[in-house]
Image (tube, rainbow, N blue to C red):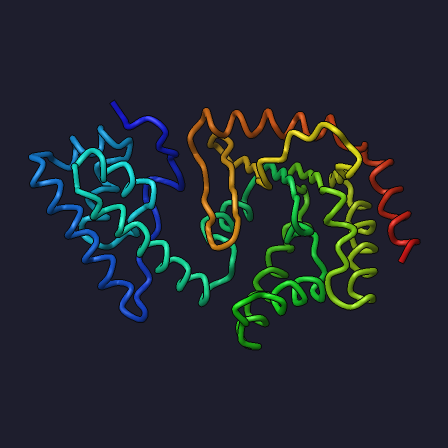
Length: 292
């Protein structure tokens, strides 16, 4: 039986290790540690896979250091292998390595952007910021320039360019089925200079004119909000079940567990019912724009 409470993420091939600043060697060492505790426990890779809810291929790849060790796998394996806290400590170091990778790569998960580019449906609930697909270039730049620790000018420009490239999806036809529910706070937060802020609101009104795009606002005065657990995105890949994506701070993940995705899809349906309809939402954006 798989360990309860372990959230399955990403896909069977998981994330390949990127070789820079000793990260590849670090993941190789982590893999050797996993193998050491597994063999000490007298378990085969297949047996450990069954106990943790991961595939034998994933565990083999992690032990060889060619795939990143998942945080949730290390947490599950800690108990199964009776590692005495060693794998839990390693999980902290794995997270730090992922943060270092994030400093060199766009803040969004590349697995997610690959799935987003070919998705048949994209649905997103946003609480903290305008979603990336709807941002102007100036707005995206303002977001990255206020990051702490500071990003280099080169890194900011690289991430802005990557974010703008994602928006090519809005020029395709037929469009994916696309909808967004934006918390009103994302519209009232004046990021960047006044022109950047106003242009961003105008851009939302313009995007809403695209046939097939649905944009709703969750008003601040709404007493019932099913999305207080945080922002998330739902994607429907061609020929595969719906998946979900969550991102906060330096942590991002694709969720493929059918039950978890089902719950998030149901939550999104509730959010759409609670939010203003599209006509009311666009009227609110125009009102906020007129106040500035």
